Image (cartoon, rainbow, N blue to C red):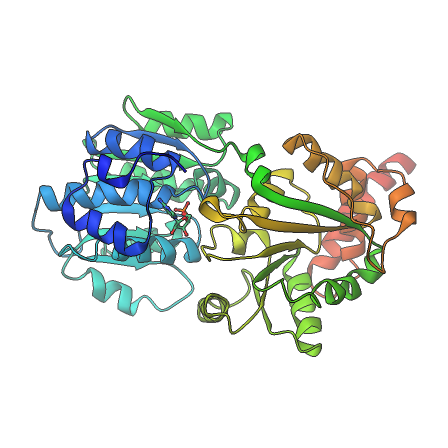
Length: 426
Ligand code: AMP
């Protein structure tokens, strides 16, 4: 947090009031850096992830611009578009606009896939000031002529790196082509590899670059530990860890949807209220799980990486990595779910023999050695002493084991795994 106050920023009274009511006292670094530049109308390249306060950093100046330059919107048009990769993020960003804009007379709506388009189409009939959307459904509605972007004034591309990971690049390119050339553009991404850099430079004009909490340093205010355990004992270890009541609001991460369901079932069987949240769940089921978690009726949310990205729930006391992620950056994103906006948090990681390669990668990225916790009944010296495989070998091994599960992916996985073998033989 900073010593500067929100009242130091040139935000209009109704916005200041909403901020006070929300309970924020000091702007976060990204808000401090971005808000003045956005109020000047500059394009922005934000290198920041969720948890930094970036939504308010763009929402507040956008809302101010809209009220200070009132304009009538035509039917099916929008003045501002925020494009974001997941349904959960879209809902959360929309809620933020409603919270910060509560004292303003502006209209906003959110569109995303996986649900009927009926209400979304209806909410666009009279036009809106702010439209929050995921790329697939937005493209659909544009093609049906239910949404028109010709009079757009502000475009925000959120979580660009995740968009590309999720395969939205073509939709995004098509959407960008439909935008007016003269517009105010904002671009956010947690990482800036060359393809993202290229996308940003095609979109922005003379942008201000604001960079906060690089992905590898978020981990610092989080108390981390790693528990070495045999794979077969992980569920028992989880039950053991959850006996401690100080684990009040917990996210448990698994690598696969199947794994998330299994873990959630085990917890339920043991009387621990939980729900799984992942891409195979209907939008309704995901939202219900998230709402119960926010309200505290369920204690444990079991999630996969994509589903959890951007989950904006305050007061998460613990993150448990039931399985370590094979992408080191995901570790930082995962544990960042606790310790939001300055709070402190605890991250506990289970590591089996094959995952030692992932652990090594994570420690390399964060530049920290994660302390090993041995005082639990499932501590395994076998795992401690096991040789660390190369990341490729570990992944192949884990994928081949996954092949033992039911479902159509089995044969593909097995085939892929066997390929190199037949090559060497043949
Ligand atoms: P975001 O990075 O936009 O997902 O925001 C992360 C979390 O920080 C959300 O729960 C916000 O409500 C909260 N937040 C945003 N700005 C502030 C602030 N200035 N002070 C305290 N919390 C904030």
